[in-house]
Amino acid sequence: MLGPKHSLLVLLLGFVLTDSAISQVNIFVLGDTRSGHSIHETMVNIIAQENYDAVINTGDLVAVGSNDDHWNKFLQITKPLISSNTAAPTYLPVIGNHDLSSDKNPYKHWHQFLTWLPGNGEYYYQDFDNLRMIFLNSTSTNDVEQLDSLKCWLDSNRREWLIVTWHYPAFPFGSKRIDSESLNEWWPLLYEAKADIVINGHAHYYARSHPLKPLPENSSCVVDDEDGIIQVISGGSGAGLYSVRKDKYNETYYDFALAHNNDKQHHYGKISITDSTLTFEAIQIDGKVFDRFVLTKNRPVHLIPYRP
Image (tube, rainbow, N blue to C red; front, top):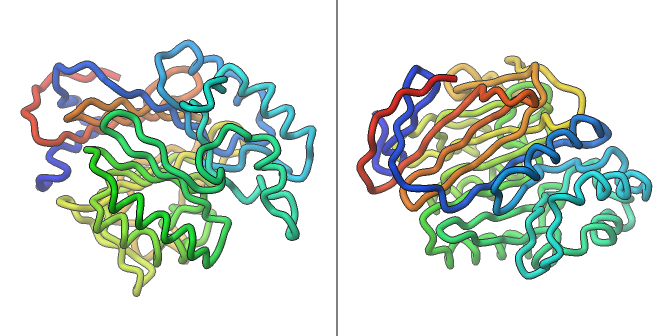
């Protein structure tokens, strides 16, 4: 039974619970676009026709971060989603390993081509009405300043909803190792702050977890329906797809933590938020919704039929 934080988490079982309020914030999710230009461009054109407040990218925007041509191609495709209003930027990515320039100056091209990003551009936060979104750099290790900034942004948050995104997932469901640094340093803080969703990329599939409590000492987690964080891996917006599978890196949590996955389709995500309801949809490039979950807070809800 779900506790007060996740008073409602409804999956594709024939019904969705929602309320009658109109969404106040719409956020779209892309990830691992890399060199899949036709797929990326199709998704950009779809989103550009929607009512959106922001588009996030879970990292690996380009295939080779030191290549100017790759960045110019990315900007050419993404142009319809990039606002000229630098006070309210609409395209908000996090840094992936493919976005790095070199060992000597890893973020040179990131700063050169993504000039509109808030804060220092490598990690930052953005508020949208009753939502705080925090964007972290998981390619930077032992970063005390970033950790201090995260603590400050969590302590100062007074908004109802909290979503945090970075590239490397702490709990992958195939193809990747556990990211020990984000598991050890970030997840405990986010769990204490009652974050709602963590969104990652890096693994080229869609995977959603049950609400999780981190167990850094065991490199694992447990399901916690009352205060747990839902992890979404969304890395299917252009790069070649990976398989979701049980392996030696995820065997301690795979069977009980994985709630839904799709490793066969390129996809993007849509988050719609009101004061009391957060709806996440995972959408194939052909428009089919293949996963949906709803979180509610502090208000009654009504049962309506859901037909995919």
